[in-house]
Image 1 (cartoon, rainbow, N blue to C red):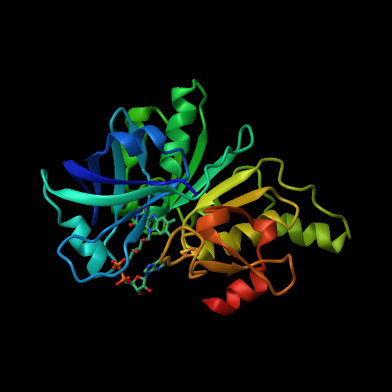
Image 2 (spheres, protein in one colour):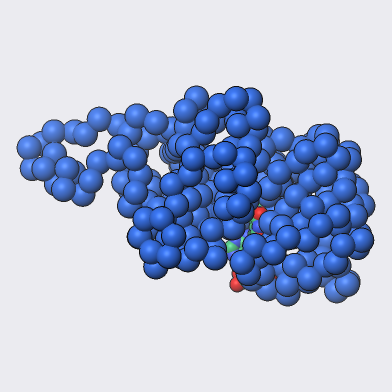
Length: 274
Ligand SMILES: Cc1cc2nc3c(=O)[nH]c(=O)nc-3n(C[C@H](O)[C@H](O)[C@H](O)COP(=O)(O)OP(=O)(O)OC[C@H]3O[C@@H](n4cnc5c(N)ncnc54)[C@H](O)[C@@H]3O)c2cc1C
Ligand code: FES
């Protein structure tokens, strides 16, 4: 796999709730990267053997953006960088992906970072993609201002009801069968038609499991798998996830993903991992 190494200058740091959006001058990577691909970023300050993986939030002109949500020491340091600092990047890594026409995008929290570039490219091509964006609170709807500036008609869902609909994104899927309908269908021994639209989701693992359960096995569901990674290029198998085929086998997310069709994954073994 061909990838680049580039030293990027931090051009802007934009706070997004507890996260931040870093705008990086990185001309070679900006020209090469496509939606759904990711970068490995060296943690500044030393002491970290492994780079950290981040989705490319967006790429325009000579700049790429990454959204960083602090969960540990590496992301805390990356979230504290200042304008003018340099970051060492590797990429683009992983495969790009072209969602089926009129796919529904479903983002959960920081998962919006994995979808924004694809959504933005659709808007730039004159289409109006539909995005369902759920988070715990309004403050965790990272990048909401950017979506609004772009003109994306997103449906927002928050667990505390502070913005948009109250609940979980997976409870507000347009056109999905309700639990009541499923019960009635089972009682009458009828099978519900498969969910008509393809769904591309990026968010926490429980969100994928809920989508898989509510859309059914035959739905065209694609999930962005954000496994912990080491090499990022298929050499270490550190990012392997259980696959259905071959039985008992695995697939390397950094090589075949990060977007994986949900029907290829062994959800029973994945549930055991959590
Ligand atoms: C393809 C890909 C794209 C990603 N895109 C983004 C992004 O756009 N923005 C963003 O903020 N994060 C993203 N992540 C997750 C990010 O890489 C991790 O949060 C980061 O590596 C944690 O580093 P750390 O040193 O801060 O935390 P660590 O000290 O390594 O870990 C802190 C805690 O976070 C957990 N953790 C670490 N990595 C992950 C992970 N991949 N998934 C779930 N839990 C994890 C650890 O188990 C631990 O509990 C992405 C991951 C992948 C694989
Ligand atoms: S991170 Fe090494 S094989 Fe995927």
